[in-house]
Length: 187
Image (tube, helix red, strand yellow):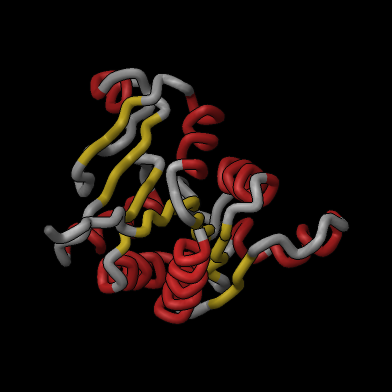
């Protein structure tokens, strides 16, 4: 009998509103979504717009699995109150926890978190992951918080954490997957 092990789950933390992101943020996000599927990862998002949505769309277009964690209590609230999409996800879990609670659940639900562009909510997701010693990948060159995090980490005087910086989606995913597989073997 074959034993099935859970797939690697990567949370996407990034700008829902992308007006401040770099011009290449959408293209890099889409490439990231494709790379995650090619490396047999499940994509976990905040069931939102912007960069996480672009990753989800690219992942679904090539047959990947995408799970969303919504701040809303129901699909109706997700759409009407939060104005969030439901497409490009296999499953959306309605947490009823608002954005702060959703951010906590999002980071804890994954083996690693990837930060793309971002604003305050993305910074919140990063700090949760960082404080909990979660593996974090930063897709550099996407603008916003992602391009500020090296300096923020340096000025926080808390050590480097388990943070990988790379501007190439393929290399970033390969680095994260290698670390996760190594950690899972050690358990």
